[in-house]
Length: 185
Image (cartoon, rainbow, N blue to C red):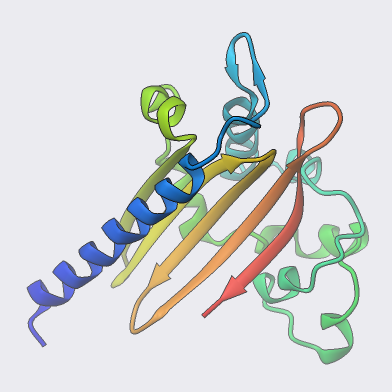
C-alpha cells in the first residue's frame, strides 16, 4: 500500500477526531469551574502533566482516591489475572504498578502540550489536542473539560484503533481526582 495514502488517511482520521472532540466539549461549557484568573482545569491539568512527565510517583498518587472501583486500570498496567480484574485498584496496587499506569507515548504527548502557548484556543473551546507519529504508530491526545469533568483521551492508530480515556472529577477543594479509566479497541 502506498505509504503517502496511508499517512493521509491517518491524518484525516486525526483531524476528524479533533473536530468531533472539540465540538463535543465546546457544546456546553457554562458549568465549568472558573476563577477570576481563568479556568481551574488548566492549572489542575498542568499540575497533573508535570507530575506524570517528571514521573513523580508521590504527586501522581494525589490524583487517585483509593480504592478505584474501575477494572480498566488493570488492563493499563498489563495485568490480566482474572481474579484481579474484578477487584478494586487499591493504594497498595498503585504502589506496585504506578510506573505502568501511563505509557511512554502518553507521557511524550503530555510533554508536548503547552497550556500557556495555547491559552486562547483552550479558553475558546475548553479543550486542546495534539498528535505525534512515532514507531510507525499515530498517537493523538485530547484534553477537554465539560460539566466539572476533565477527560484525557489517548488515541492510538496502527492497523486499527484503540484508546485509553482518563476521567477526572473535581473534588470539593477544586483538585482533580481520577474516577474512571476506560479502554476501547
